[in-house]
Amino acid sequence: MKRRDFIIKSSLAGMALVAIPNIYSQDRIITKLQAGNPLRFPPELQPGESLIFNSAEVEVWPGTTTQILGLNNSYPGPTIRVQKGSDFSVLFENQYTEEATIHWHGLLVPELMDGQPKDAVQPGNNYTYSFPVFQRAGTYFYHSHAHHLTAKHVYMGYAGFFIVEDEEELQYGLPTGAYDIPLLIQDRHSVYQPQFNYSPSMMDRMLGYLGDVPLVNGTPEAFFDVQKTLYRFRIVNGSNARVYKLGFSDNSPFHIIATDGGLKDEVVPTSSVFLSPGERIEILFDFAPYNIGNSITLQSQTFSGIGNQGTLMELLRFDIAGDLSSGGTAPQELPPIDYYDINDISGTRTFTLSQGIMGTGMHRINGLTYDMNRIDEVIPFNKLEEWKFVNNTNNYHPMHVHGVLFQVYSRNGNTILAPNDKGWKDTVLVNPNETVQTLVKFIDYSGTYLLHCHNLEHEDDGMMLNIEIDNPTNIENEDPSPNNFELSQNYPNPFNPSTTINYKLTIAGFVTISIFNLLGRKIETIFTGHKSSGQHSIVYTNKSLASGTYIYELRMNDRALRKKMTLLK
Image 1: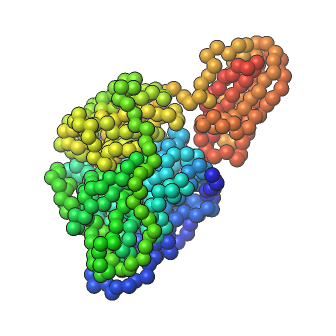
Image 2 (image 1 turned 90 degrees about the vertical axis):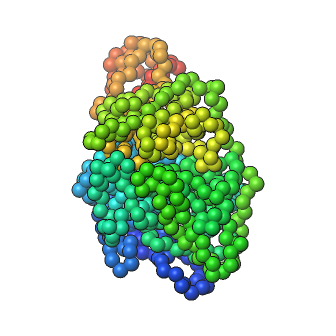
Image 3 (image 1 turned 180 degrees about the vertical axis):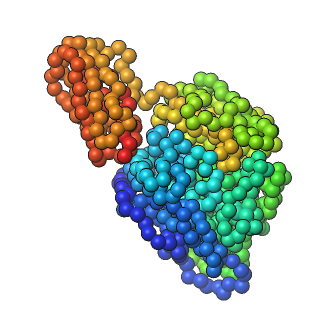
């Protein structure tokens, strides 16, 4: 497979969201009789561009401007497309007055690339995010994850698509190009229009900051001209707190083909589906039965919910404008998924979701609120566990886990799952007074990751835990009984660009010192040769590696010791 290397070094200037990219443009065949605004699409990040965080003035409502906090003066942020098997790298520049990070939601990345609050980039500083993209093709996204600032940053515009593509998907005949449409759904408060004022009340912090105006790809009253053919829609719920019940205005059926972690193992028909903050689905919808000049609307349909959840919202109007064909089909089968067996679990963890009296820290997991310096759970590497989310509140809690894709097993003991539950997930909606069982196995990286509610007001209020993935990957496993030598922790650590590695030999021997990444791939050998007994040191310098965690290995007489070191640029 060809590898695309996104090495991003320079900045994007000016207004980034100005027009629909050519890939989505279509000739207008009918005269518009209904009000609305054409669906916008954010620009796509190009090789040679940085991601720059700052405030900007952009046109959301026609004829006026809105102040946003975002990346590259764009709302939503630039779309990132990456081929599976490639290496992704981007320079993040914080030019705003508050600390910020980029969290790659749903992507499996090393700890220091995860964009957690503990790794915030301070104003005026920059950070290189770099990681291999080895997971399943799918619709992922990115957003800020700064401590106590996540909700504000996302609400004011800081979020964007991260789409992983794979040539192997082509065999399923799904719609592509102009018929493969990403949709980011968010809500805003009309009382502040045209501004994105973030001013939650105490009740908003309890329930979540719920707006009454839906925006799709940053477009209010959005419409999109479509052909009488099959489309693929990649849908992201990027709202702070709102749960959507997605369906079409005439209750026409559609087909769900993917969840958070890519394609399902079957195409499932339905007429409505719930989507909570942080979740994604991909659907197929065929406009062939409609006549040119007809319209149909994607809605959030009514349901019974606390506060303003469950309100009817008109999200996106589709106007039938022509009879071109996408050439796409609804496949008879999709790639198989290896489902976990609950009989194989090594243990069970229970996460009880609760809320206290109104005030700081009202939202809790197992009675705890977030402490950046505290490890709350130690999780074994490569061990299947059952995680139970027990919601003792009358609120919605979409639970998101970093660093892993998991599987939903049951809701209140019922193992017959809704189509958006079955498949690979990183976020699961736990309804009021409900218990959800999931099966979780960390198989990619060790280190500290996060478990939290993706209602962003709840997260900022403390509904988040640190989880430590304990048993490292194979390359990090130290030989428990190496003979005749010792390996010390490098110093300084973190380092940039040089660090010293000290080691001690009790007998003379042939020594090799090498550097590996966390996937076990050797980067380079920095010393090979015969060494006498005694204390030794070597200075390691590397100016080409991206920021991240690496492994250094001392090998002697077919025995080895390994330790982690961290490069920060």
